[in-house]
Length: 68
Image 1 (cartoon, one colour):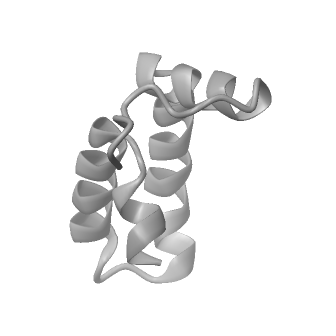
Image 2 (tube, rainbow, N blue to C red; image 1 turned 45 degrees about the horizontal axis):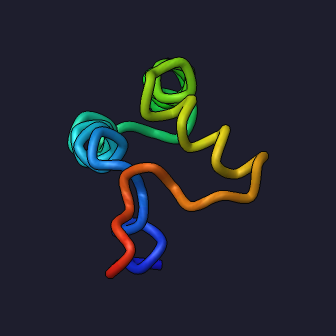
């Protein structure tokens, strides 16, 4: 949902928009390699690590303020 998207990290939002633009006219098979690469980079990023850590520790996401 849009709510879930808006709660994602700022870097993740920027990268997903870019990925959607790059893969919009590709078949699902053609879109797999750039999608897999984007997921791997996101998970390895500082923001991705912080998000995973907050999930595993059941803590708020580091990029969300208290008023979100």
